[in-house]
Length: 346
Ligand SMILES: [Zn+2]
Image: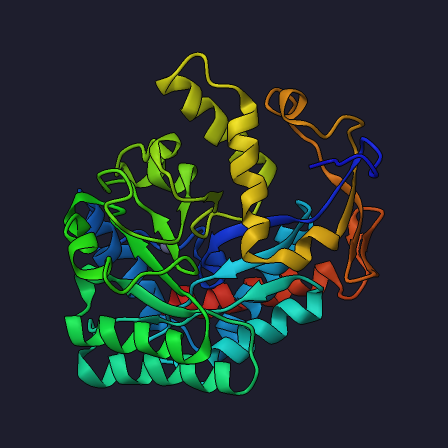
């Protein structure tokens, strides 16, 4: 990564290959009505209640805070997956604008699903179409095969094909979605972004980049994805738990190590670098770090490394511990206000 031409303390921008910026306000949210005891219950009792409560103003400040926190960790590009069933139209514009304001690259997608009936699926597809037609940088989102009919999966894949982009979808995150490859493999291509893949048997014939989200998978107790087994490209994501990619790399490394004590950190590092296949322009971004040796054997065992200066598309967007384009204190204050509104609805 550091390349022959970069000083030891400089890297290209980090990429979070699977994020949910809408979940940034979730921290500290009220407890669910009862304790979830499985992954489907975590979705039903936590995330599907949260996403249904979002309006565009909440989405805006959730994305602003998420983008700010990404930059604070040297992450200059986010591959986002969004759902807000009560505020679908225009939601991708709000996220794209928030990231642009902070100075972070984002690839947007609206997660289409049949959870809210045929009309909900139609409106989700339409938001992807509207955003892409207007020139937005995006993929076509699908929540997951297990919440979609075959007709919806085909329509979303067709829309992606029409715009020459991939599909961003959760695949086999939990055993409940084990059947996904049987319904998706004939639709998938190399541009697809396959989040999780924990319960895929090998690549299961699925084409695309598998995004490993080690912290999220541990948090949801869905199992270890063992990403080293995939022939597909593997990248790293956070699944909405911030965008600290050095931290996610460290976790990916020790999990790899837990399954194979001979595993070297160069493998998890290659997953981190693979995120730039999804957002190639992040390779031209420059992050100057607080640590002199930005290479995997050092960083696997060095915590607390942070950016001193960040240049995105030739512009300095982070300097002396603060963003240059926005006021961090204002973003935190506005996000806190929106979190109170959101929690009130829950
Ligand atoms: Zn996700």
